[in-house]
Length: 148
Length: 284
Image (cartoon, rainbow over all chains, first blue to last red; front, top):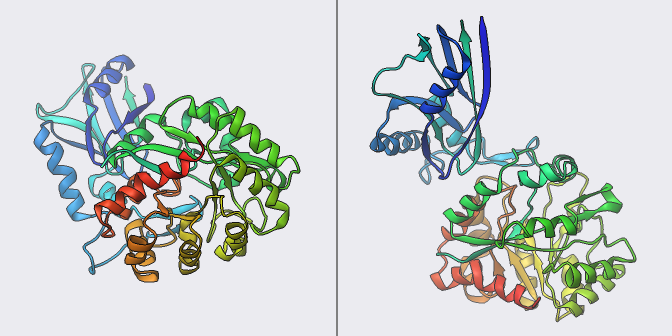
């Protein structure tokens, strides 16, 4: 049994951004020496997601835009508000990013793929994205390979 | 809009400085009480760029006597300023030390810092205490602005009463040549802070206020309901400076909030750039 783990730093350059990390995952799996097994990819944050979708620029715009419609940073005036908009004593500041936490929940924080013959088995259209909802920020993505 | 200046930044989350000075982590977590992740300068500049903020005033707090710690020394501020010409460094001195005026002179003349930051809450003094007057006198001689924490403070151990704006009236009245900036709109005493600024032309207010809800909703309350926006637009347009209070508030969020209030373009130009340049210009 081989288990390998790595933290990958991803720097988002915009408030909303989908960053294709597929090559990084492929490279780590190849380096791990695992021939048969599984790779998990997890964001270490609660205002970002790990998503799998087709790797095209139009979807990179549509996905965060739709999640923002579902869970907006600022709900429409006079509709509803977030209980999270309050002082968080453990952070020494207010938490006014409930919408970003909710987008993270909707998008999910993790994905995994099988490894076969030393390669990540993905569909031909599938790309692995780190999705930023509160950038620009330096973020951490955790990659773990388990197999033999 | 470009060319903006954020007049109120505590550079506590700068990863490059934490690596060089690990003791700053304790100052950030325990003295200043901030729990956010450390970030590279790259992301700070990207965030500033996203809202047209070109430069940031960096503020230290010398709390040697009251907390046994400095939240950045003057030398560390200089070190950080040398990493980018986008930074404008302020000094801090421990006002309880008799040598504070001379320390201030050294910070301005020798280190090249551009103003003084004092925090009555963390440094535990009353702004109108006559024992502070030598510091104010020296700042006036050096022609530098003083940025005071004013209004409510989240800092552990600080007392609200030290932030009341009327504590600063004697300073404004007795040192008419000294430019003083009262931070955080003096919230919750916004009306008192505005009254001071209306009466004393050497009193400025910065926008870095957020105590509930979110930046846009909070500022809408403070700057349109507590005091009508027209007062700021018409009477105080030359005495308001943009400040974010980063890292307690993201620069991007505060900048968008100020711009959402309904100020005229001309007034926004004053708030985001011109008034800060006027304050800093006096430092030469």
